[in-house]
Image (tube, rainbow, N blue to C red; front, side):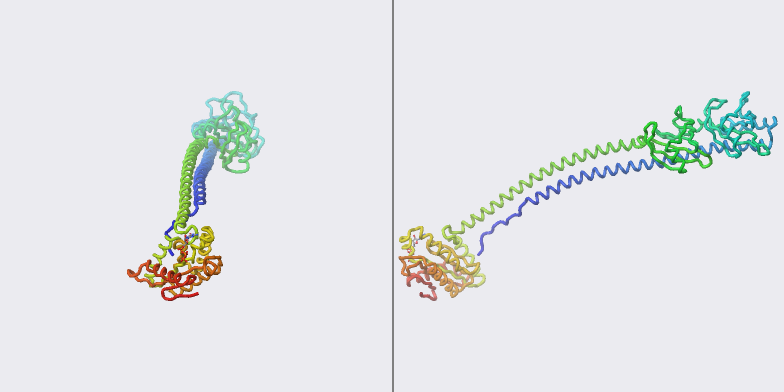
Length: 521
Ligand SMILES: Nc1nc2c(ncn2[C@@H]2O[C@H](COP(=O)(O)OP(=O)(O)OP(=O)(O)O)[C@@H](O)[C@H]2O)c(=O)[nH]1
């Protein structure tokens, strides 16, 4: 039996709504965090690269400054070696000193770093120099370079502490060598004075920012010069500084340290001179180096922050809209589900008899029509049993209409319980008359079912004083047909079964009749 089509139940929407909403929220949060992370990572990398580039540049600066210092001192030292050679070859007679004076003047003019070249005898008296005129009664025996050479046998170059020139008053660096007599005894000192400003002019050519610094320091920790030059720079003891300690243990390198003096954190590149006991350091302020990076980072962070806020706001607004839409969708689905249930109920009610809960007449008519068509298509036998309660009018009269209703209900359930196949249909045909449609059943089969029904009603044993049997009984008419298209109609089957029922009634009730056969009880 086919029933009118019903709508499928839609799956509930709550999990989909939850998962979609969470997915969207997760996505928005993920995108925001990713943006922040990517920008943070970019910024950190840019900072790292900036510092690395600065390290390279301070290293290069230190190398250039060290090379400059080496070359500057080497040129002066070469002049001292020339003086020593000339004195040894020419002696210190007045004529020889005159020639030496000319040489010193020439050399001083050639080398811009030189302030002067001087030769002192073993007592510190001025023998000859590059000055236009020699100051009278000056003795340099008290200078540290003089004392050093007088007390040391070696003939190495000696770089003394920076001093103010007695002749010019400016800060100078002294480079000196010991002069010996032919017997190796101390004969005096050859001295070159180097203008410390010569170094500073070179250091000015480097871009070290406002808070950067360049220093030239002796290996014993004495500062020879500094850019920028502070009042106490020259001659300052650097032994406690990091740059001194670093250069004492490494020929070159870089380090970052916060200055104890001004609190500025600087990136330092340092290098020892190859030939002389000095080292140099070039330092730039970390704040200045990172100033552009910091501005860029602020701009980026502000941009990313605004983007994240906008993305978050728009994202959560859209999620809100999505939630509303999903809620509305869920409402529609709930309404549809309720409608489906209602429709099913209505459909069931429209096809069901209220009293007996059997299929009603409408359902019977629809089903008979369908099964009739199917039987035509399949050329199969379709059987119909019409059942009528015997003397039911009297039952009503004897026991009342309510008892009659109850009796009908019991009979209906008993008839229905005899139904074997899912395709069979038991219906209330009208009043106290029931009908059973039996698809793919011939008349013998239908007779057996009808007899089973009749027996089942007997088994109920419902008292009926107005019936011959003393209990409620039924009569049944059976008909079966293999219908032919355009030849047979469902109504023929009903009429034939009705005729058989009439025959059953007529022949004494409580029996099953067919148009071919009659079963007596
Ligand atoms: N209680 C009750 N009675 C019904 C219902 N439908 C029909 N009837 C009664 O069933 C009776 C049928 O009476 P009749 O058609 O004369 O037939 P009968 O009394 O059963 O006699 P036979 O069919 O000849 O055995 C009527 O009195 C109807 O009122 C119902 O739903 N409930």
